[in-house]
Image (cartoon, rainbow, N blue to C red):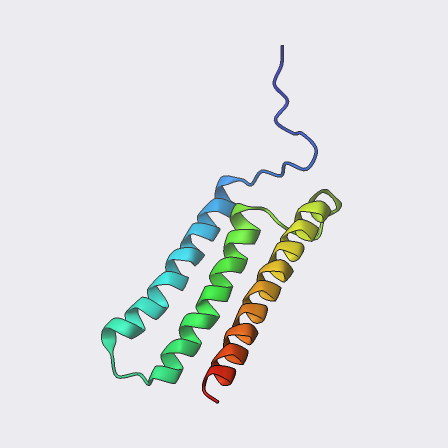
Length: 108
């Protein structure tokens, strides 16, 4: 009985990819943390930097650790991920819209 680790759709990275992903993740965590701890930055700049590094962190995690890319083996994983993001966005936007609508009508 042999174990085939190269099953369809299961991409595995090497040590170099994991190391690069780990180092990028550490850097993208230290940047906003350092800015907040140092102080002296405006609230708008801090929120912008935190948001940008958060999105970059998500992309690093998806590419280096989950191995999501545009290859044909990953097509269904990417489609499922996009569907999940759209569903979450619809739920969030719909919830905020409903709460805003209710708040407006309660204040009349």
